[in-house]
Length: 105
Image (cartoon, rainbow, N blue to C red; front, side, top):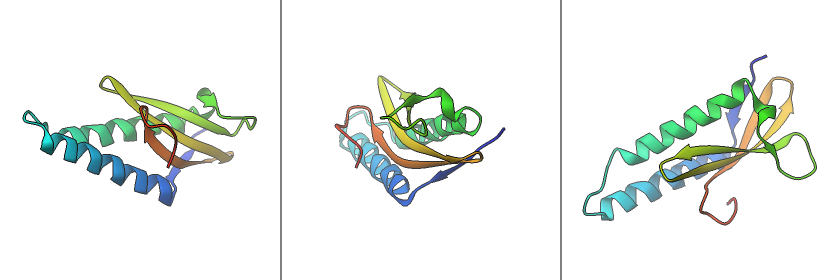
């Protein structure tokens, strides 16, 4: 079975925020890598692609078996995507954060 993976408006905003943060960090660095933001987004997209076939493989968040977190590796840390399996064909990404952030925005 293949699931459709959709971004919520909040998750799309998170991607923009994360991209802007990485870009600014790299611009401020003397040895900044301006390809880093695009590589981070690509890693996130590839990670979310895993949910198309295996959304139940990730860890549960709370009591519901349908709300879960996906850990996406990137560099020395990575990202975490909060998602919900809404039916037998759809996964909705609710939020995406950096692993070092305290919580979802």
